[in-house]
Length: 285
Length: 303
Image (cartoon, rainbow over all chains, first blue to last red; front, side):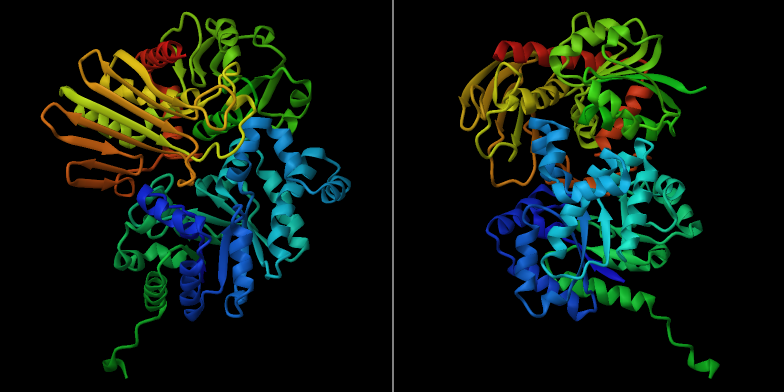
Protein backbone atom coordinates (compact mmCIF):
# COMPACT_ATOMS: atom_id res chain seq x y z
CA UNK A 1 0.00 0.00 0.00
CA UNK A 2 1.20 3.51 -0.76
CA UNK A 3 0.45 6.21 1.77
CA UNK A 4 0.63 9.87 0.96
CA UNK A 5 2.91 11.88 3.25
CA UNK A 6 2.58 15.53 4.13
CA UNK A 7 6.12 16.92 4.27
CA UNK A 8 6.04 18.98 1.06
CA UNK A 9 2.68 20.47 2.00
CA UNK A 10 4.16 21.82 5.24
CA UNK A 11 7.49 23.13 4.04
CA UNK A 12 9.62 20.17 5.07
CA UNK A 13 12.43 18.73 3.00
CA UNK A 14 15.26 16.75 4.56
CA UNK A 15 17.82 17.50 1.84
CA UNK A 16 17.27 21.04 0.57
CA UNK A 17 16.64 24.37 2.26
CA UNK A 18 15.58 25.89 -1.08
CA UNK A 19 12.88 23.28 -1.67
CA UNK A 20 11.62 23.60 1.89
CA UNK A 21 11.40 27.40 1.58
CA UNK A 22 9.55 27.08 -1.72
CA UNK A 23 7.02 24.73 -0.16
CA UNK A 24 6.67 27.04 2.83
CA UNK A 25 5.77 30.10 0.78
CA UNK A 26 2.74 28.20 -0.54
CA UNK A 27 1.88 27.04 2.96
CA UNK A 28 1.99 30.59 4.31
CA UNK A 29 -0.39 31.73 1.64
CA UNK A 30 -2.71 28.85 2.63
CA UNK A 31 -2.50 27.87 -1.00
CA UNK A 32 -3.49 24.23 -0.92
CA UNK A 33 -4.09 23.95 -4.66
CA UNK A 34 -0.82 22.12 -5.24
CA UNK A 35 -1.53 19.78 -2.33
CA UNK A 36 -5.01 19.08 -3.67
CA UNK A 37 -3.68 18.32 -7.13
CA UNK A 38 -1.18 15.87 -5.66
CA UNK A 39 -3.94 14.27 -3.61
CA UNK A 40 -6.16 13.82 -6.66
CA UNK A 41 -3.28 12.14 -8.49
CA UNK A 42 -2.80 9.88 -5.48
CA UNK A 43 -6.49 8.92 -5.34
CA UNK A 44 -6.44 8.17 -9.06
CA UNK A 45 -3.81 5.54 -8.31
CA UNK A 46 -5.60 3.99 -5.37
CA UNK A 47 -3.67 5.90 -2.70
CA UNK A 48 -6.37 6.81 -0.21
CA UNK A 49 -4.44 7.06 3.08
CA UNK A 50 -2.80 10.33 4.11
CA UNK A 51 -0.38 10.56 7.02
CA UNK A 52 -0.39 14.08 8.40
CA UNK A 53 1.57 15.63 11.25
CA UNK A 54 -0.55 17.72 13.55
CA UNK A 55 1.12 20.98 12.52
CA UNK A 56 -0.67 24.17 13.47
CA UNK A 57 -1.69 24.41 9.81
CA UNK A 58 -3.00 20.83 9.56
CA UNK A 59 -6.61 21.66 10.52
CA UNK A 60 -6.71 24.21 7.70
CA UNK A 61 -5.50 21.68 5.14
CA UNK A 62 -7.87 19.00 6.44
CA UNK A 63 -10.80 21.42 6.40
CA UNK A 64 -10.01 22.23 2.78
CA UNK A 65 -10.06 18.50 2.04
CA UNK A 66 -13.40 18.02 3.80
CA UNK A 67 -14.85 20.73 1.59
CA UNK A 68 -13.93 18.73 -1.48
CA UNK A 69 -16.17 15.71 -2.19
CA UNK A 70 -13.31 13.78 -3.76
CA UNK A 71 -10.64 14.50 -1.18
CA UNK A 72 -12.84 13.66 1.77
CA UNK A 73 -12.38 10.02 0.74
CA UNK A 74 -8.94 10.08 2.29
CA UNK A 75 -8.43 8.13 5.47
CA UNK A 76 -6.20 10.08 7.81
CA UNK A 77 -3.31 8.78 9.89
CA UNK A 78 -2.38 11.60 12.29
CA UNK A 79 1.30 11.67 13.23
CA UNK A 80 1.40 12.86 16.83
CA UNK A 81 2.49 14.59 18.94
CA UNK A 82 3.78 17.50 16.91
CA UNK A 83 6.53 18.42 19.32
CA UNK A 84 7.83 21.40 17.33
CA UNK A 85 4.48 23.04 17.96
CA UNK A 86 5.20 22.78 21.66
CA UNK A 87 8.87 23.59 21.40
CA UNK A 88 8.48 27.30 21.92
CA UNK A 89 6.19 26.80 24.90
CA UNK A 90 8.62 24.30 26.42
CA UNK A 91 11.57 26.62 25.84
CA UNK A 92 9.90 29.63 27.38
CA UNK A 93 7.55 28.17 30.01
CA UNK A 94 8.89 24.69 30.76
CA UNK A 95 7.68 21.14 30.20
CA UNK A 96 4.83 21.11 32.77
CA UNK A 97 3.30 24.31 31.37
CA UNK A 98 3.55 22.98 27.84
CA UNK A 99 1.81 19.76 28.78
CA UNK A 100 -0.94 21.60 30.62
CA UNK A 101 -1.38 23.98 27.70
CA UNK A 102 -1.87 21.10 25.30
CA UNK A 103 -4.24 19.00 27.36
CA UNK A 104 -7.94 18.66 27.48
CA UNK A 105 -8.66 18.64 31.21
CA UNK A 106 -11.78 16.48 31.05
CA UNK A 107 -9.95 13.88 29.01
CA UNK A 108 -6.97 14.10 31.34
CA UNK A 109 -9.23 13.39 34.30
CA UNK A 110 -10.67 10.33 32.56
CA UNK A 111 -7.16 9.16 31.66
CA UNK A 112 -6.08 9.65 35.22
CA UNK A 113 -8.90 7.46 36.46
CA UNK A 114 -8.07 4.83 33.85
CA UNK A 115 -4.30 4.77 34.30
CA UNK A 116 -3.90 5.81 37.92
CA UNK A 117 -0.78 7.70 36.95
CA UNK A 118 -0.42 11.44 36.38
CA UNK A 119 2.41 11.18 33.81
CA UNK A 120 0.71 8.34 31.93
CA UNK A 121 -2.53 10.31 31.92
CA UNK A 122 -0.70 13.37 30.66
CA UNK A 123 0.82 11.37 27.81
CA UNK A 124 -2.48 9.77 26.86
CA UNK A 125 -4.31 13.10 27.07
CA UNK A 126 -1.64 14.85 25.08
CA UNK A 127 -1.88 12.36 22.23
CA UNK A 128 -5.67 12.05 22.39
CA UNK A 129 -6.21 15.77 22.03
CA UNK A 130 -4.24 15.95 18.83
CA UNK A 131 -6.02 12.89 17.42
CA UNK A 132 -9.37 14.39 18.35
CA UNK A 133 -8.57 17.50 16.31
CA UNK A 134 -8.43 15.31 13.20
CA UNK A 135 -11.29 12.93 13.98
CA UNK A 136 -13.64 15.81 14.79
CA UNK A 137 -13.37 16.99 11.20
CA UNK A 138 -15.15 13.84 10.12
CA UNK A 139 -12.34 11.80 8.64
CA UNK A 140 -11.89 8.11 9.22
CA UNK A 141 -8.82 7.62 11.41
CA UNK A 142 -7.75 3.96 11.11
CA UNK A 143 -4.37 4.32 12.78
CA UNK A 144 -2.21 6.76 14.67
CA UNK A 145 1.49 7.32 14.15
CA UNK A 146 3.82 8.42 16.90
CA UNK A 147 6.48 10.85 15.68
CA UNK A 148 10.03 9.54 15.62
CA UNK A 149 11.42 12.26 17.88
CA UNK A 150 8.99 11.04 20.51
CA UNK A 151 9.40 7.29 19.91
CA UNK A 152 13.18 7.42 19.81
CA UNK A 153 13.36 9.62 22.88
CA UNK A 154 11.16 7.18 24.81
CA UNK A 155 13.21 4.23 23.56
CA UNK A 156 16.40 5.97 24.66
CA UNK A 157 14.93 6.58 28.09
CA UNK A 158 14.00 2.91 28.50
CA UNK A 159 10.29 3.65 28.16
CA UNK A 160 9.27 1.21 25.43
CA UNK A 161 6.51 -0.15 27.67
CA UNK A 162 4.74 3.22 27.60
CA UNK A 163 4.46 2.98 23.84
CA UNK A 164 3.07 -0.53 24.27
CA UNK A 165 0.44 0.74 26.69
CA UNK A 166 -0.57 3.44 24.27
CA UNK A 167 -0.92 0.81 21.54
CA UNK A 168 -3.16 -1.35 23.73
CA UNK A 169 -5.34 1.64 24.62
CA UNK A 170 -5.67 2.50 20.96
CA UNK A 171 -6.54 -1.08 20.05
CA UNK A 172 -9.63 -0.72 22.23
CA UNK A 173 -10.83 2.02 19.91
CA UNK A 174 -10.10 -0.11 16.85
CA UNK A 175 -7.03 1.89 15.86
CA UNK A 176 -3.52 0.62 15.31
CA UNK A 177 -0.36 2.30 16.49
CA UNK A 178 2.47 3.02 14.11
CA UNK A 179 5.76 3.89 15.77
CA UNK A 180 7.86 6.07 13.49
CA UNK A 181 11.46 5.44 14.38
CA UNK A 182 14.93 6.14 13.07
CA UNK A 183 16.26 3.22 15.09
CA UNK A 184 14.27 0.29 13.69
CA UNK A 185 16.39 -2.59 14.94
CA UNK A 186 16.28 -1.33 18.50
CA UNK A 187 12.57 -0.60 18.19
CA UNK A 188 11.96 -4.10 16.85
CA UNK A 189 13.79 -5.52 19.85
CA UNK A 190 12.00 -3.41 22.46
CA UNK A 191 8.48 -2.73 21.22
CA UNK A 192 5.37 -4.89 21.42
CA UNK A 193 5.21 -6.99 18.22
CA UNK A 194 1.73 -5.70 17.39
CA UNK A 195 3.10 -2.21 16.83
CA UNK A 196 3.84 -1.30 13.22
CA UNK A 197 7.19 0.34 12.61
CA UNK A 198 7.59 3.12 10.05
CA UNK A 199 11.21 3.89 9.36
CA UNK A 200 13.58 5.68 7.01
CA UNK A 201 14.85 3.59 4.13
CA UNK A 202 16.22 4.30 0.67
CA UNK A 203 18.70 2.80 -1.76
CA UNK A 204 21.17 5.62 -1.14
CA UNK A 205 21.39 4.68 2.52
CA UNK A 206 20.56 8.29 3.44
CA UNK A 207 19.63 8.35 7.13
CA UNK A 208 19.21 4.56 7.10
CA UNK A 209 20.27 3.20 10.47
CA UNK A 210 22.44 1.52 11.51
CA UNK A 211 23.61 1.35 7.86
CA UNK A 212 22.24 0.09 4.57
CA UNK A 213 23.56 -3.47 4.81
CA UNK A 214 22.70 -3.85 8.48
CA UNK A 215 19.20 -2.60 7.78
CA UNK A 216 18.68 -4.97 4.85
CA UNK A 217 19.82 -7.97 6.91
CA UNK A 218 17.43 -7.04 9.69
CA UNK A 219 14.57 -6.41 7.26
CA UNK A 220 15.07 -9.82 5.67
CA UNK A 221 14.63 -11.52 9.04
CA UNK A 222 12.05 -9.55 10.96
CA UNK A 223 8.50 -10.81 11.19
CA UNK A 224 7.14 -7.41 12.14
CA UNK A 225 5.02 -5.21 9.89
CA UNK A 226 7.29 -2.42 8.69
CA UNK A 227 6.51 0.66 6.60
CA UNK A 228 9.12 2.72 4.80
CA UNK A 229 9.42 6.48 4.57
CA UNK A 230 12.09 8.53 2.82
CA UNK A 231 12.34 5.98 0.00
CA UNK A 232 13.09 8.70 -2.55
CA UNK A 233 15.75 10.21 -0.24
CA UNK A 234 14.12 13.64 -0.46
CA UNK A 235 14.14 13.47 -4.24
CA UNK A 236 17.78 12.39 -4.59
CA UNK A 237 17.18 8.71 -5.40
CA UNK A 238 16.35 7.56 -8.93
CA UNK A 239 12.94 5.97 -9.27
CA UNK A 240 14.28 3.11 -11.38
CA UNK A 241 16.78 2.22 -8.64
CA UNK A 242 14.15 2.54 -5.95
CA UNK A 243 11.70 0.09 -7.49
CA UNK A 244 14.45 -2.33 -8.57
CA UNK A 245 15.47 -2.78 -4.94
CA UNK A 246 14.38 -6.17 -3.53
CA UNK A 247 14.15 -4.79 0.00
CA UNK A 248 11.37 -2.44 -1.08
CA UNK A 249 9.09 -5.44 -1.64
CA UNK A 250 9.39 -6.40 2.00
CA UNK A 251 7.67 -3.26 3.29
CA UNK A 252 3.93 -3.54 3.81
CA UNK A 253 3.45 0.16 3.05
CA UNK A 254 5.44 2.97 1.50
CA UNK A 255 5.04 6.55 2.66
CA UNK A 256 5.69 8.99 -0.16
CA UNK A 257 5.54 12.76 -0.13
CA UNK A 258 5.66 15.01 -3.14
CA UNK A 259 4.26 18.36 -4.17
CA UNK A 260 4.00 17.26 -7.82
CA UNK A 261 1.13 15.10 -9.08
CA UNK A 262 3.35 13.67 -11.81
CA UNK A 263 5.79 12.35 -9.20
CA UNK A 264 3.06 10.56 -7.27
CA UNK A 265 1.72 9.09 -10.50
CA UNK A 266 5.15 7.93 -11.63
CA UNK A 267 5.92 6.45 -8.24
CA UNK A 268 2.60 4.61 -7.96
CA UNK A 269 2.88 3.20 -11.46
CA UNK A 270 6.48 2.10 -10.98
CA UNK A 271 5.68 0.37 -7.71
CA UNK A 272 2.67 -1.33 -9.29
CA UNK A 273 4.83 -2.64 -12.14
CA UNK A 274 7.55 -3.83 -9.80
CA UNK A 275 5.06 -5.79 -7.69
CA UNK A 276 3.23 -7.39 -10.60
CA UNK A 277 4.67 -10.83 -11.45
CA UNK A 278 6.07 -10.99 -14.96
CA UNK A 279 3.95 -13.09 -17.36
CA UNK A 280 5.14 -16.65 -17.91
CA UNK A 281 7.28 -17.20 -20.97
CA UNK A 282 5.32 -18.30 -24.04
CA UNK A 283 7.57 -21.32 -24.48
CA UNK A 284 6.19 -22.82 -21.27
CA UNK A 285 2.65 -23.04 -22.70
CA UNK B 1 30.38 -3.38 34.17
CA UNK B 2 27.94 -0.51 33.55
CA UNK B 3 29.15 3.05 33.20
CA UNK B 4 28.26 5.49 35.97
CA UNK B 5 26.92 8.81 34.76
CA UNK B 6 25.48 11.92 36.33
CA UNK B 7 22.97 14.28 34.72
CA UNK B 8 22.72 17.78 36.18
CA UNK B 9 19.44 19.28 35.01
CA UNK B 10 16.68 16.92 33.86
CA UNK B 11 15.16 19.30 31.34
CA UNK B 12 14.46 18.87 27.65
CA UNK B 13 18.08 18.89 26.49
CA UNK B 14 19.32 16.87 29.44
CA UNK B 15 16.89 14.05 28.75
CA UNK B 16 17.73 14.12 25.06
CA UNK B 17 21.45 13.75 25.73
CA UNK B 18 20.74 11.05 28.27
CA UNK B 19 18.65 9.09 25.76
CA UNK B 20 21.31 9.54 23.09
CA UNK B 21 24.02 8.07 25.34
CA UNK B 22 21.75 5.21 26.38
CA UNK B 23 21.17 4.35 22.72
CA UNK B 24 24.86 4.54 21.85
CA UNK B 25 25.94 2.35 24.77
CA UNK B 26 23.00 -0.05 24.49
CA UNK B 27 21.75 1.03 27.90
CA UNK B 28 25.00 0.26 29.73
CA UNK B 29 24.73 3.36 31.93
CA UNK B 30 23.46 3.80 35.48
CA UNK B 31 22.39 7.37 36.14
CA UNK B 32 22.50 9.75 39.04
CA UNK B 33 20.18 12.66 38.32
CA UNK B 34 20.63 16.06 39.93
CA UNK B 35 17.56 18.21 39.80
CA UNK B 36 16.70 21.03 42.22
CA UNK B 37 12.96 20.60 41.82
CA UNK B 38 11.57 18.04 44.26
CA UNK B 39 8.56 17.55 41.99
CA UNK B 40 10.76 16.71 39.02
CA UNK B 41 12.88 14.34 41.13
CA UNK B 42 9.74 12.60 42.28
CA UNK B 43 8.64 12.19 38.67
CA UNK B 44 11.91 10.69 37.48
CA UNK B 45 10.42 7.22 37.75
CA UNK B 46 8.32 8.19 34.74
CA UNK B 47 11.38 9.26 32.83
CA UNK B 48 13.77 6.46 33.67
CA UNK B 49 13.20 2.84 34.76
CA UNK B 50 14.37 2.04 38.26
CA UNK B 51 17.11 -0.25 36.94
CA UNK B 52 18.73 2.66 35.11
CA UNK B 53 18.36 5.23 37.90
CA UNK B 54 20.99 4.81 40.62
CA UNK B 55 20.37 7.92 42.71
CA UNK B 56 18.97 11.41 42.75
CA UNK B 57 20.26 14.59 44.36
CA UNK B 58 19.15 18.18 44.63
CA UNK B 59 22.61 19.67 44.05
CA UNK B 60 25.73 18.37 42.26
CA UNK B 61 27.86 18.80 45.39
CA UNK B 62 25.71 16.32 47.27
CA UNK B 63 25.79 13.60 44.59
CA UNK B 64 28.00 10.81 45.86
CA UNK B 65 30.85 8.91 44.25
CA UNK B 66 32.75 9.28 41.01
CA UNK B 67 31.44 9.04 37.46
CA UNK B 68 32.61 7.96 34.03
CA UNK B 69 30.41 10.62 32.43
CA UNK B 70 28.83 13.87 33.57
CA UNK B 71 26.25 15.89 31.65
CA UNK B 72 25.68 19.48 32.75
CA UNK B 73 22.48 20.71 31.16
CA UNK B 74 21.26 23.03 33.88
CA UNK B 75 20.66 26.73 33.13
CA UNK B 76 23.84 28.54 32.06
CA UNK B 77 24.19 30.43 35.34
CA UNK B 78 24.64 27.08 37.15
CA UNK B 79 27.24 25.59 34.78
CA UNK B 80 30.22 26.64 36.84
CA UNK B 81 28.87 25.31 40.14
CA UNK B 82 28.28 21.91 38.57
CA UNK B 83 31.64 21.91 36.80
CA UNK B 84 33.53 22.76 39.99
CA UNK B 85 31.66 20.03 41.86
CA UNK B 86 32.33 17.37 39.22
CA UNK B 87 35.60 18.26 37.48
CA UNK B 88 37.65 15.90 39.70
CA UNK B 89 34.99 13.22 39.97
CA UNK B 90 34.08 12.61 36.34
CA UNK B 91 36.18 11.16 33.53
CA UNK B 92 34.36 13.08 30.79
CA UNK B 93 32.17 16.10 31.31
CA UNK B 94 29.70 17.54 28.81
CA UNK B 95 28.25 21.01 29.29
CA UNK B 96 25.54 22.55 27.17
CA UNK B 97 26.50 25.73 25.33
CA UNK B 98 27.53 28.36 26.23
CA UNK B 99 30.49 27.16 28.30
CA UNK B 100 30.58 29.79 31.10
CA UNK B 101 32.81 27.85 33.50
CA UNK B 102 36.04 28.81 35.27
CA UNK B 103 39.22 26.82 34.67
CA UNK B 104 37.99 24.48 31.94
CA UNK B 105 40.07 21.36 31.29
CA UNK B 106 40.48 19.08 28.25
CA UNK B 107 38.06 16.45 29.56
CA UNK B 108 35.25 19.00 29.20
CA UNK B 109 33.22 19.08 25.96
CA UNK B 110 30.91 22.02 25.30
CA UNK B 111 27.78 21.32 23.25
CA UNK B 112 28.33 23.30 20.08
CA UNK B 113 26.65 20.53 18.19
CA UNK B 114 26.87 22.05 14.70
CA UNK B 115 30.65 21.56 14.75
CA UNK B 116 29.94 17.84 14.49
CA UNK B 117 27.73 18.01 11.41
CA UNK B 118 29.21 16.07 8.47
CA UNK B 119 28.98 19.03 6.09
CA UNK B 120 30.70 21.43 8.50
CA UNK B 121 33.46 18.86 8.89
CA UNK B 122 33.66 18.47 5.13
CA UNK B 123 34.00 22.23 4.67
CA UNK B 124 36.65 22.47 7.38
CA UNK B 125 38.65 19.67 5.76
CA UNK B 126 38.31 21.25 2.30
CA UNK B 127 39.76 24.61 3.39
CA UNK B 128 42.40 23.28 5.77
CA UNK B 129 45.78 24.96 5.33
CA UNK B 130 44.54 27.50 2.81
CA UNK B 131 44.45 31.26 3.38
CA UNK B 132 40.92 32.62 3.74
CA UNK B 133 39.65 35.93 2.38
CA UNK B 134 36.21 35.94 3.99
CA UNK B 135 33.88 33.82 6.13
CA UNK B 136 30.17 34.67 5.96
CA UNK B 137 27.56 33.07 8.20
CA UNK B 138 23.87 33.69 8.54
CA UNK B 139 20.91 32.46 10.51
CA UNK B 140 17.25 32.88 9.62
CA UNK B 141 14.66 31.56 12.03
CA UNK B 142 10.99 32.00 12.82
CA UNK B 143 11.56 31.55 16.54
CA UNK B 144 10.12 34.91 17.63
CA UNK B 145 7.19 36.22 15.63
CA UNK B 146 5.38 38.11 18.40
CA UNK B 147 5.84 39.62 21.87
CA UNK B 148 8.83 37.96 23.51
CA UNK B 149 8.63 38.88 27.17
CA UNK B 150 9.87 35.60 28.67
CA UNK B 151 13.44 34.72 29.54
CA UNK B 152 14.33 34.50 25.85
CA UNK B 153 13.60 38.17 25.42
CA UNK B 154 15.62 39.48 28.36
CA UNK B 155 19.29 40.30 28.77
CA UNK B 156 19.34 39.37 32.46
CA UNK B 157 18.41 35.76 31.72
CA UNK B 158 20.78 35.35 28.76
CA UNK B 159 18.12 35.71 26.07
CA UNK B 160 18.29 37.27 22.63
CA UNK B 161 19.25 36.04 19.20
CA UNK B 162 22.96 36.59 19.89
CA UNK B 163 23.01 34.19 22.82
CA UNK B 164 20.56 31.68 21.39
CA UNK B 165 21.86 31.42 17.81
CA UNK B 166 24.82 33.81 17.70
CA UNK B 167 26.84 31.47 19.87
CA UNK B 168 26.35 28.69 17.29
CA UNK B 169 27.37 31.01 14.45
CA UNK B 170 30.44 32.13 16.38
CA UNK B 171 31.43 28.52 17.03
CA UNK B 172 31.25 27.84 13.29
CA UNK B 173 33.27 30.99 12.53
CA UNK B 174 36.00 30.01 14.99
CA UNK B 175 35.96 26.46 13.65
CA UNK B 176 36.67 27.69 10.12
CA UNK B 177 38.66 30.89 10.57
CA UNK B 178 40.48 30.31 13.84
CA UNK B 179 40.85 32.92 16.59
CA UNK B 180 39.13 36.24 16.08
CA UNK B 181 41.10 39.48 16.14
CA UNK B 182 38.15 41.86 16.18
CA UNK B 183 34.37 41.54 16.08
CA UNK B 184 31.82 44.33 16.31
CA UNK B 185 28.09 44.66 16.39
CA UNK B 186 27.35 46.63 13.23
CA UNK B 187 23.59 46.62 13.60
CA UNK B 188 21.19 45.43 16.29
CA UNK B 189 17.42 45.70 16.26
CA UNK B 190 14.99 44.85 19.04
CA UNK B 191 11.55 44.07 17.61
CA UNK B 192 9.66 41.69 19.85
CA UNK B 193 12.04 41.16 22.78
CA UNK B 194 12.38 43.28 25.90
CA UNK B 195 16.00 44.43 25.91
CA UNK B 196 17.94 42.14 23.58
CA UNK B 197 18.41 42.13 19.80
CA UNK B 198 16.08 40.12 17.57
CA UNK B 199 18.18 40.93 14.52
CA UNK B 200 21.90 41.59 14.41
CA UNK B 201 24.80 42.00 12.03
CA UNK B 202 28.39 41.49 13.08
CA UNK B 203 31.63 42.23 11.26
CA UNK B 204 35.28 41.71 12.06
CA UNK B 205 38.49 39.94 11.14
CA UNK B 206 40.19 36.75 12.18
CA UNK B 207 43.71 36.73 13.62
CA UNK B 208 44.86 35.35 10.27
CA UNK B 209 43.33 38.31 8.43
CA UNK B 210 40.08 36.85 7.03
CA UNK B 211 37.06 39.14 6.99
CA UNK B 212 34.11 37.91 9.07
CA UNK B 213 30.47 38.76 8.42
CA UNK B 214 27.63 37.32 10.49
CA UNK B 215 23.92 38.06 10.28
CA UNK B 216 21.11 36.79 12.47
CA UNK B 217 17.35 37.21 12.36
CA UNK B 218 15.01 35.10 14.46
CA UNK B 219 11.90 37.05 13.43
CA UNK B 220 11.81 35.77 9.85
CA UNK B 221 8.32 34.54 9.05
CA UNK B 222 9.43 33.34 5.62
CA UNK B 223 11.18 30.27 7.01
CA UNK B 224 9.66 27.31 8.75
CA UNK B 225 12.58 26.47 11.03
CA UNK B 226 16.06 27.78 11.81
CA UNK B 227 18.30 27.65 8.77
CA UNK B 228 21.99 28.40 8.54
CA UNK B 229 24.21 29.38 5.63
CA UNK B 230 27.99 29.03 5.88
CA UNK B 231 30.22 30.41 3.15
CA UNK B 232 33.99 30.68 2.85
CA UNK B 233 35.91 32.53 0.15
CA UNK B 234 39.54 31.54 -0.13
CA UNK B 235 42.32 34.01 -0.91
CA UNK B 236 42.38 32.66 -4.47
CA UNK B 237 38.73 33.59 -4.95
CA UNK B 238 37.28 30.07 -4.74
CA UNK B 239 34.06 29.88 -2.70
CA UNK B 240 32.90 26.86 -0.71
CA UNK B 241 29.67 26.70 1.25
CA UNK B 242 27.10 24.56 2.97
CA UNK B 243 23.71 24.97 4.58
CA UNK B 244 23.73 21.66 6.48
CA UNK B 245 21.88 20.06 3.55
CA UNK B 246 24.09 20.73 0.57
CA UNK B 247 27.81 21.33 0.13
CA UNK B 248 29.01 23.46 -2.75
CA UNK B 249 32.51 24.00 -4.07
CA UNK B 250 32.18 26.47 -6.91
CA UNK B 251 29.69 24.92 -9.31
CA UNK B 252 30.01 21.42 -7.81
CA UNK B 253 27.20 20.40 -5.48
CA UNK B 254 26.83 17.45 -3.15
CA UNK B 255 23.67 16.73 -1.19
CA UNK B 256 23.81 15.33 2.32
CA UNK B 257 21.60 12.55 0.92
CA UNK B 258 24.47 11.48 -1.32
CA UNK B 259 27.05 11.28 1.46
CA UNK B 260 27.50 8.53 4.03
CA UNK B 261 25.04 9.53 6.69
CA UNK B 262 24.63 6.50 8.90
CA UNK B 263 25.02 7.40 12.52
CA UNK B 264 24.34 3.91 13.88
CA UNK B 265 21.68 5.31 16.15
CA UNK B 266 19.72 8.46 15.50
CA UNK B 267 18.02 10.96 17.75
CA UNK B 268 17.39 14.57 16.66
CA UNK B 269 20.07 14.67 13.97
CA UNK B 270 23.28 13.22 12.61
CA UNK B 271 25.29 15.90 14.39
CA UNK B 272 23.82 15.00 17.77
CA UNK B 273 24.89 11.38 17.39
CA UNK B 274 28.32 12.45 16.15
CA UNK B 275 28.73 14.75 19.13
CA UNK B 276 27.69 12.03 21.59
CA UNK B 277 30.04 9.54 19.98
CA UNK B 278 32.85 12.10 20.15
CA UNK B 279 32.05 12.64 23.82
CA UNK B 280 32.33 8.90 24.51
CA UNK B 281 35.40 8.19 22.40
CA UNK B 282 37.71 11.18 21.82
CA UNK B 283 40.89 11.23 23.91
CA UNK B 284 40.38 14.91 24.78
CA UNK B 285 38.39 17.95 23.74
CA UNK B 286 41.11 20.61 23.45
CA UNK B 287 40.00 21.95 20.08
CA UNK B 288 36.32 22.21 20.95
CA UNK B 289 37.21 23.75 24.30
CA UNK B 290 39.26 26.49 22.63
CA UNK B 291 36.27 27.27 20.39
CA UNK B 292 33.81 27.31 23.29
CA UNK B 293 36.06 29.58 25.37
CA UNK B 294 36.48 31.82 22.33
CA UNK B 295 32.71 32.11 21.92
CA UNK B 296 32.35 33.05 25.60
CA UNK B 297 34.93 35.82 25.20
CA UNK B 298 33.28 37.18 22.06
CA UNK B 299 29.80 37.16 23.58
CA UNK B 300 31.12 39.00 26.64
CA UNK B 301 32.76 41.62 24.41
CA UNK B 302 29.57 42.06 22.41
CA UNK B 303 27.44 42.42 25.52
